Length: 206
Length: 206
DNA sequence: TTGTGTGAATCGATTCACAGCC
DNA sequence: GGCTGTGAATCGATTCACACAA
Image 1 (cartoon, rainbow over the protein chains, first blue to last red):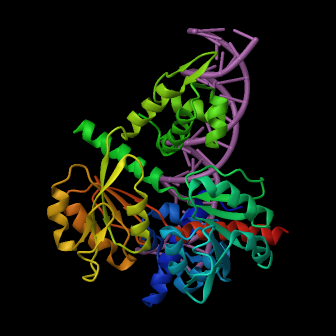
Image 2 (cartoon, chains in turn red, brown, blue, yellow):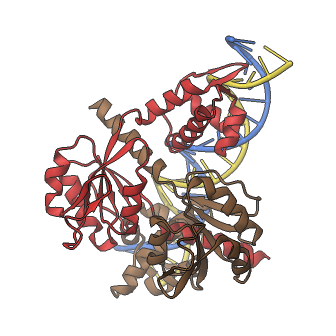
Image 3 (cartoon, rainbow over the protein chains, first blue to last red):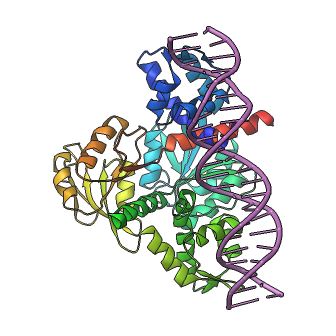
């Protein structure tokens, strides 16, 4: 079993390893990799060793091989379908951004004025009433909620009832879901407030 | 000293408390507040007690008072100036969103075509060359990097050299900063990959 | 009687430090 | 000789369970 804290760092390791592959580096030490990822070498070794024994003592890690193993573990050797709901600026950013390992399969919005508009790649904005049908046609889709907070729970229920078990939520609202559904939250306001807290601390002690 | 894990939850408590204030609730128990915030009541009580003794045994917490104390602790009783760099969809989302407790003071972009355009509130897009001067005119500004990864470090250096000590980074890149500068990272690709990992686990055990 | 505040126990993650292998 | 992999120690966060105040 891989610790949750380790899983949260695998994407960073994967990105750094991809950059190393790109630049033609073939072997890397835990010290170097850790520096590039912004963690300590002890943490990095502990993390990687929980995936398996992929290094060589006295030498380091073979970049290609390690990169592949991390990708395999993360499940990004295949492509995952994304379903984006809410085509405000945030939703649009995601659709255009399209991270590697993911493919925007469908885009939905409640606004009739937006329905039918085409976004990148010949993708057309669909109405929420079409969501269940479209999602049921996908396997292991990941839902992305980029709606206002007031609509988030309703959209979430729609996703869950259509079989989605992984949700990324940008709306500042707590979503109620069954235990077998995973929700990750990205909350800009929270991040800013945490920064503000520390900024204030600095100011008080200054 | 307030534990870091507690600080990260204060914004959620504050949001829930604001909603309760809004709906006219005057007293709330740790059980109710915890349910609304999506944490256990033990955790919530431990968190709040590290701020001070703001509850009444046998009764609960006075909503107005607690909300004010949390806001005070977070430092959002005043307004913090944001400086946004990069006016892609993500940057635009932030400018339009404008969370409570923050005010977008200036927007920058490297693209000459965007410079001079006006975004909301009579705010005009400025060139990066103007950043130091503008930022130095602000106190305790928070920098928001919404540029491509390739420009992130350069922009970061510019911010740091202009006196910014709190940065929210949306670019998928590790930023090198002095120890007295705090960087928080929001990484969409990482979040999706973590979801994909668990989705894959479910599929394998199914 | 009710629900907060908190010692004590537990759990998980990080760090240390070195045995083991190339 | 050098670097990985990992027991053992440490640290921080969570949970338990109850004394205490209203």
